[in-house]
Image (cartoon, rainbow, N blue to C red):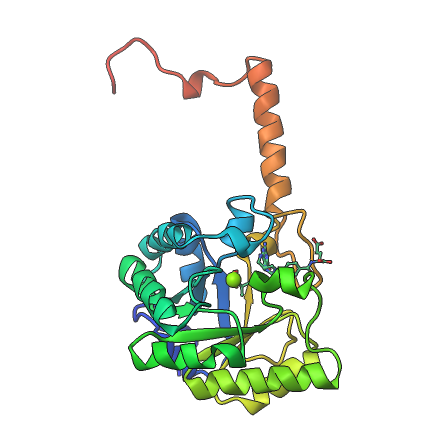
Length: 276
Ligand SMILES: Nc1nc(=O)c2c([nH]1)NC[C@@H]1CN(c3ccc(C(=O)N[C@@H](CCC(=O)O)C(=O)O)cc3)CN21
Ligand SMILES: CC(C)C(=O)C(=O)O
Ligand SMILES: [Mg+2]
């Protein structure tokens, strides 16, 4: 096997599924074309997450995110990504009512963005919906543990699956999603030991976010790990850069130079002569 992965072929849901127990699956979110270009060069999977409602649109939770927002950002990401498997979140309210509603909206995401798969939140109660979609040609990624679209019934963004009973429920959720045909399952904010156990018990890859190092892959919101969405610092986010601080320093310098008439300089200004 070559040291550098093949950057030409487009990865699909089946390629991601085949990575179970193999090299870790590298995932980040992307919401825009320029970020998708960067992420696509280094990741196996790009997630157009409904977190875009909070990160890009300033919403207080993901509950207000619409199909139109997911399609617009999905189309932007599609223009920047040619290698990674592109997965788009089904937003709150677009799939919970029944499997026909879920199919209609998932098919619309696939057709209008060109994504390779969709993701939806929920365990056993969504297994029937997952099977319905998969049987009709739509690869589905599951998402259990902390499911942010249920923040109002969960009562916050706490660690999930602590205690024997809760842990067993989450194992059953993961097994039900895999049995229904999900090609992968996101595990969000649960104990490291439970992340390891679910990873051992299901035949498809787990992608962790705050679920420990033993998952088959990891995902983060790219703005979080870049320090762009700077006031959000949950324990599971590692800051690989401080881009908000870098941007603030640049904007401060620009504001001072404009006020002092030091910007624009001659090198940014145009003379009267003919263009060279
Ligand atoms: N930018 C961003 N990153 C995410 O990981 C993310 C989103 N947005 N939006 C959708 C969900 C919501 N998620 C969350 C939200 C809150 C916590 C959390 O731990 N909240 C802490 C406070 C953290 C802080 O702001 O410093 C809490 O105590 O509720 C975790 C995951 C994960 N997802
Ligand atoms: C955090 C990931 C898993 C997500 O669902 C999102 O970005 O919306
Ligand atoms: Mg999401």
